[in-house]
Image 1 (cartoon, rainbow, N blue to C red):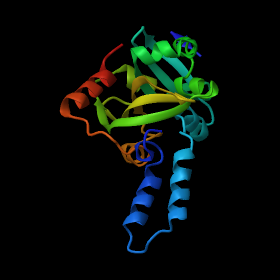
Image 2: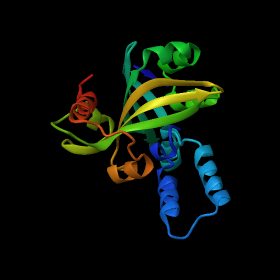
Image 3: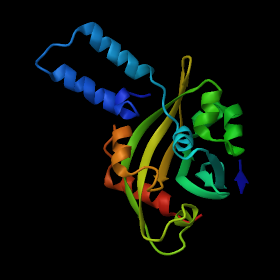
Image 4: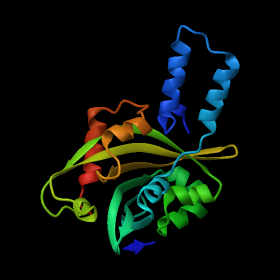
Length: 219
């Protein structure tokens, strides 16, 4: 155990995109320069990383690798209070083969236990999330690893965000991984996730089942 922007509407820019949609549908015409400026601001706003959001909300942040192989890793993104860790996000990462090979230097840091988003960001990459699914997963039974990491009782419902992680720098754009994140109820709930990440893809029943299995699979 180791411790250590497709379209605007698909990421944290959802609220801005909805506002723009309202403006363009309004009976009162919007000057083209105003609309262009709004679109530009939307496209330039950086993706807020999960690690940054945890640190901002709880005062600190760390990552613990629970399990990892060449294709997948499971990790706990946690905050610490009075010397006690609480998992705020349980993340399951499925690496995309081709993208991983093209950024092998940074990827080595990731598999060494570094946080994915902040590691790529510090190396000059832009992070974009293409949301696949936002929903909830019921964690059943007693002593499940996730509820133990989160310091929660059993039979807890967790908000889930599944997305394709894309990285971009200069003229290079890569699909690096598909990530499923389950969040502590005191951190993010389903309504907050939908506001932050309006899904750009309608997940089918098979995809939703696979997402739930990835979350609940014992490691």
